[in-house]
Length: 217
Image 1 (cartoon, rainbow, N blue to C red):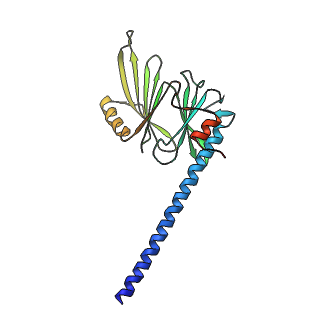
Image 2: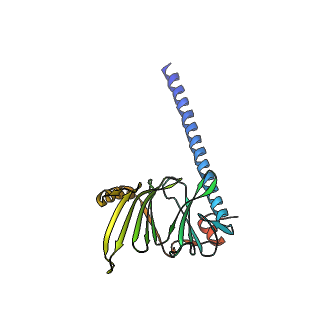
Image 3: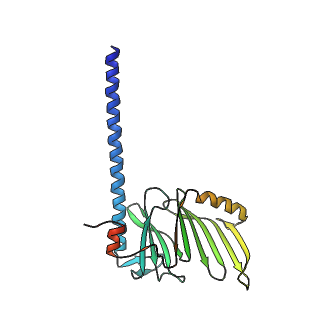
């Protein structure tokens, strides 16, 4: 009697294992299809004759691109560099595939932007004009949100004279507090820095679409 019960339990356990394995393969297949859809959408977007920025169009001349998973959710974002898109040396924009569409997320005058590719999606950027501004942001897969900013100024000898930190609401906050929070935001982040000229991005052409996005048969 006990032997029959034992065999039945083995059969039930075996069937459960088969069901779990099938579900796992089904999930993996879904992820593979989604990743392919993302790449197809990005390739089509980059092949357009005109690219939409925040408030204007620009031709594809001087355009570079790169795909990166900025917040470790297994979904790549599209980074686009426009050599003529800013009063700095170019402009960097972030796009994402959301609800089956390529959507604009944010853009930066390109002095320097650093992405820390971790679960937080930490983004650090710098702007230099009369003084300078440092921006500390996070990316949740749909939006890039401001966490802290730092504004600084120089005297006639180009030495720092004033440096003030602010929270997301514009309230002054201590440098020590911000630095402690930034260390947490950077944790386990794989660093990617893009500076003027975007030398670690790829020219927007068919050969590079085939090599870095999706090989079109």
